[in-house]
Image (tube, rainbow over all chains, first blue to last red; front, side, top):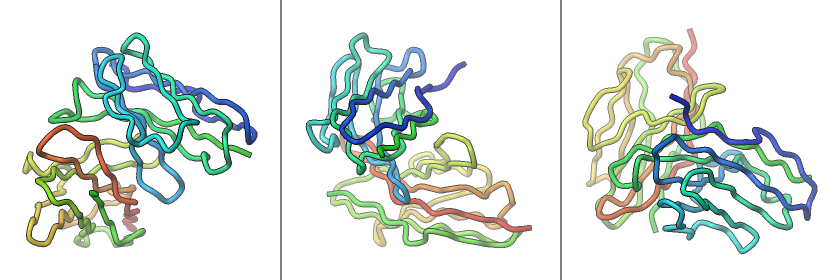
Length: 115
Length: 110
């Protein structure tokens, strides 16, 4: 079956602009995660959804970052007033239920470049 | 706070040589440890987890709580093992998400 998909694969924007990154999890997976991977770093946790609600958003760096999952499937990560430091690969993952005892399956990522 | 350290950015070996990718962690509770791998132009995928105690693609890793380590080993490296390897930790006592190390690039030359 289809794995986790993310669109767009690449996004170039200018400082100060607003961007939306989309994640389509594996069908039937109730848990969804967003990570950010900066150059030379490992993935860094941003937010975790169980169903429609954000169960843990402790990794969001500031209030410019926001994510939604209104119907418990597709999720959108939204970044307002982008800064050059937001440039990174944004990874989405999903699992069958919560993180405990369940493997996370990763998408290919969206490479965001803020000029 | 939990932390995962992978001291080597790059490990270069010849085909057939033994490989050990180091991972040390800092966590006060009971952790679960994982190794993830990312081959060229592919997505990040789970390689193995310590609770499974299994060998995947010839790789093994043993959790050493005394040394707070979870090194990844393979006795004879193959060219197809060339990839980026990430060690990750999760709180084993309750739910939590993954904390990753910075990764080690393994290059296996013919």
